[in-house]
Structures are given as C-alpha cells and as structure tokens.
Length: 81
Image 1 (cartoon, helix red, strand yellow):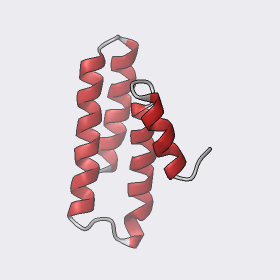
Image 2 (cartoon, one colour):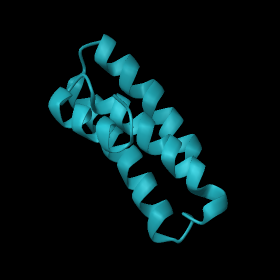
Image 3 (spheres, one colour):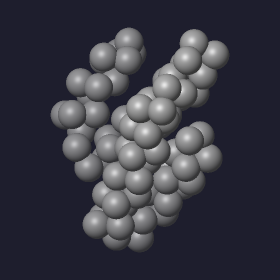
C-alpha cells in the first residue's frame, strides 16, 4: 500500500508538471483504491495505522492542486491548519 501511494504521488506530480491532468486524476484513483483495499482487508491494525495516516496525508496533498477546497477540508480533518 505504501509503495502504491508513493508511486502515485510521484506520477501525479510529474503529470501535473506536464499538464496531463486526466492521467494525474487516474493516479489519484489508484492511490485511493490502494488505501481503501488496505483498510477493507483489515490492514488498519494499530501497528499499521501510521501507514494509513501517511497514505491519507499524501492523498490529500495529491488532490490539492486539482480540488483545493476539498483538500483544505480534508487537511483540517487530519488535524492540520
């Protein structure tokens, strides 16, 4: 799950720089699916909660350039200003 999210983060930043927004959105979906499947499989055990949290933070950072208002609300839900 961590590998998929980090890979998606790199791909999203590259695709945004190259103005390939549709591909960037597809990468966000892949990261979201990786996080959702990890949570659904019960991998959100206390010892892996930090990995889920890290993935969520990276996901919010990925959606920031495309949906800034949603990203801001999600960022606040995660406890940041």
